Image 1 (cartoon, one colour):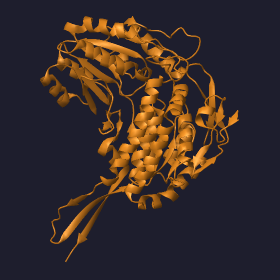
Image 2 (tube, helix red, strand yellow):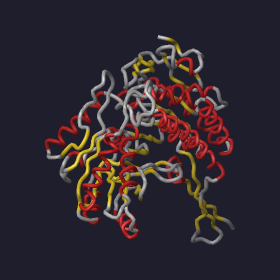
Image 3 (cartoon, one colour):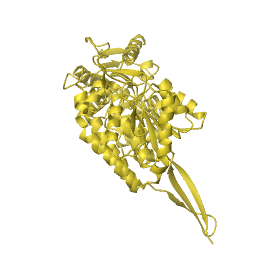
Image 4 (cartoon, helix red, strand yellow):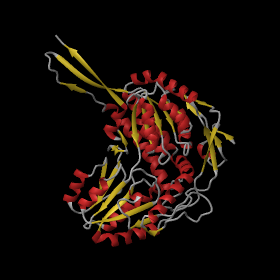
Length: 492
């Protein structure tokens, strides 16, 4: 096993597995035991990252706490300058970083490159808020009194990341935290941690003060739990499953630590008879196979008006059957790669098998792919499902799309809202009144009209019900990392 040393990123990708170290208080620190990281497309060992415990978490949080006061006192425009140094490093190493994501997450190369570029742009976008952070002046009932509402940083943020967009989620947690004056401890997913440790090496090449950003490895049951339990953590921001989010909320509640949770989704897409069916089919298909269906805001279920159901199924069938999938680290021109691990593969396989048992008809796909290695599942289209079928209610998180026939918009809205999730939704229609109706009546954080499911950095990515608490992106996401301080000044 090679040490991380100081070899260039590009060289280390091709020289065998690498041991990485935690990044705490501006230093790389050995972590004791290690977690092995493999390529989900072929099982090859890529490297090892520290399996941190409570002591390591404590050291990282203490470093963040020690750095926070001085960081908060810096003018926001100075903090923005450090963010721009970071984004410049990301752009400088975009190809190597994309290579890492392709190998450790199984993402196809074009999407990996989009993730790197979007991450750099997101950091710059948040840096632009340096001169836009605002408070309020509130009218007083008293003579000669002025009331100010100030926005101040929380303090120390714990960022716990998922594996599906591992590099972008670093920025989604880090950039708004830093620009508002917080410091942060980040734990990447144990499935895809290497990109975060390489990111730490890029941080070390900037002028960022020690302790402002700390990156540690570990599993959720140990390192993640210790982060959530820590009394010096002021905000836990987590992206991942509903089950884990619920446990985080319960644990954080013991210290009344604030939480920001982006959890699962079962996004509905409604296709009306007056829609552009080619547009709808392509947008829903793209939203389903992106990242092999492992995206919380992907279209997970479709409701199609009866008059166009068969024609729409035919269009989707052609797209699904033309899907090229394989090993993105060795094959090019692919639509999707493998699922991230065997747990995910088995979950998808069970979901499709249950859909068959409950009366669904597999139009195409429907089985584990016949490949020599990796966690590949055939892109799968299912028709003939009902509202009570598990495939229409439980998050699949794979390249599987169930389609249910409906007799009108009102029925589609009722079925769409009948879910424990409430993250994203969409409708395809050429009727303005129908578009306005779903905007009023769909109970979701986001609705896309005549386009694929994919949010903008200046929007507000937030869910309802079990899809989460709080949100991310834009002004409203930025202010999730602040708390208010109201000041009353009584004049003479």
